[in-house]
Image (cartoon, rainbow, N blue to C red; front, side, top):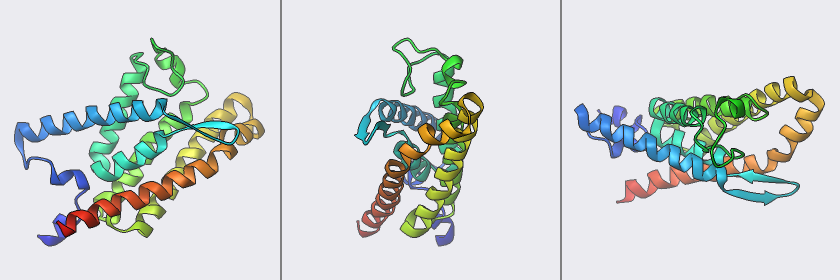
Length: 196
């Protein structure tokens, strides 16, 4: 019994055990997650020559807290909102442009966010979210996969050299900082909960 408890993501502490209340809570958490993703996409930090959004940090935190199923469902709901034309992405105008934005230069990164959530959520489901070293390793793998997907799609559009120069290199330092921050925050929350 103790083993099953230690393998549940952070959000499981707040979820009703079963039934309609559990589904309703998960739905509300997914909506809250999409709001956090939208806010993080619109929040920019100037770090060198490019503005960096807080979106990857939000994806890491949502996936680590929600686990794989709810984390991926939240990211898919976020993508659906964007596809319907809601201005949820970093560069979308006020009225949004839906699918056209999603197949543009950031399309590979957006798809990569879903895979990133799956990797980090999978790790959280196995209790890695309690251990900073294990969690940072999972997040680094997720980051590399997301960047590779973004690079590959951007390379199709503008070529590999420009894709590397403009789509990967400027974001390495900022994303490593976000990995370190997320991998520290989630285990810290678990430690605080153990003490209370």
